[in-house]
Image (cartoon, rainbow, N blue to C red; front, side, top):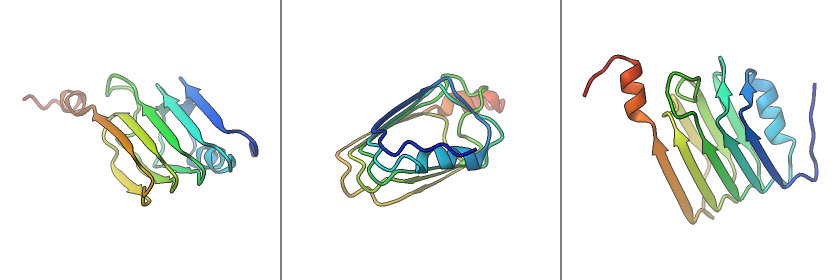
Length: 126
């Protein structure tokens, strides 16, 4: 199944369960004029690669689950291709690997990794 939103500029996804690498990549890449993407409290089940490719994207906010025992991005490789990104905000677990393109337009970035929850999940005490 292919989904295409050729004129969509703003996309907010909340409490969505992503379960397939290919369809997730197709969703983001089939929005050629997407400028704002918010991914909030979504679950990434059995995903190896999360690829966000949106050349027109200016604002990306990823707000993961508050606890590490919900499937976050910690077992995924995250690839972001958004050369026009101006604002980036990420809250959640640390991804297994991250591939980012050059963000030469970036003026605002906010990153909050949920490291303590991951240590508690793995049984590591501070």
